[in-house]
Image (cartoon, rainbow, N blue to C red; front, top):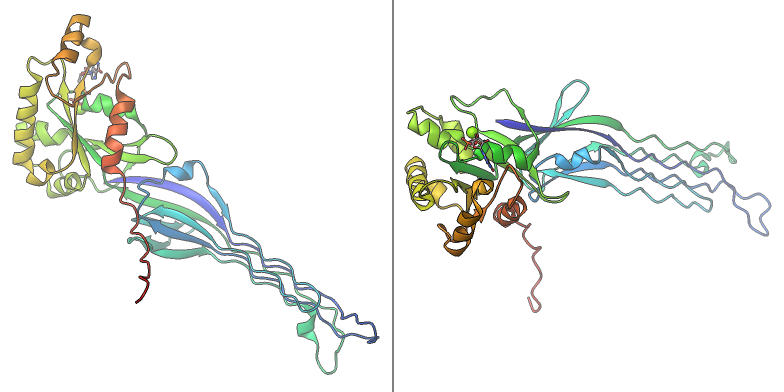
Length: 338
Ligand code: GDP
Ligand code: MG
């Protein structure tokens, strides 16, 4: 299993101060105390969002503070409460307190929410302190500071896209080329072969996890067992990229061979959306390239060179719609006349 991690600091909003004030009215020489309470500070929450699949956004922003409460005012006006700050995290995120390592929450389902830093309470205004014997209190409390915490977020990654191909098709090279973040390998080793994972970042909003699945074919060739965990992991991918070496004598035959092996391995895998990728285009002589354009050996395949970077953008843009997390269901609308 692979783990994506982030460390963030969260702070609830401070409470607003209570107000010390006395009523002033034209014909009332000694107005009573009328200082209002401060508003409560907003809290910081984490919410599980099915549209996210990595913790990468927390490389750009690590400090979160909810809005403070407003101070109380005269005429018994209570300060407005601060708004809560909701931070979206991927479904499956584990939340730990960085000090003490306690597990605070396991946001396993969409829309799961947890308060991670409470806002401070607002201070009491002086109107609250008036008693029969003490009618003009000057005392008002300051607001409480918001709670502050450092959190460790941890997400077990499932690959969105699996790269499959015969040995030497260029899977590892492509993975290294299109991924930057290398998640740590967690202490849950697969029984035999490890897929190799990386996070592909199309831009700040669009990320997905890609895995080079060496075991699928190579391990099968070597007669090695792959382990149930590996299979389960692979079966949860949303899409596959079939990599074929374009310099092969017969790319179409390689694809057929690959498809046969994948289907023997797992029928579920063959039902996934896929892109066929012809690799190592830089090795094609100009004439061969022209021929390829005129008579594509595999219609619809994307031609790439991981070495030169050609075609990579196109490949990732083709993959994105296949792996894009499902949009949240639209809120139900009331039907008129019901
Ligand atoms: P894998 O077995 O599918 O993981 O294949 P590798 O990524 O290890 O690549 C096999 C060989 O092909 C290596 O020697 C790579 O350097 C080479 N290779 C991979 N991609 C390219 C490419 O785009 N152009 C060229 N010229 N060689 C490549
Ligand atoms: Mg490899």
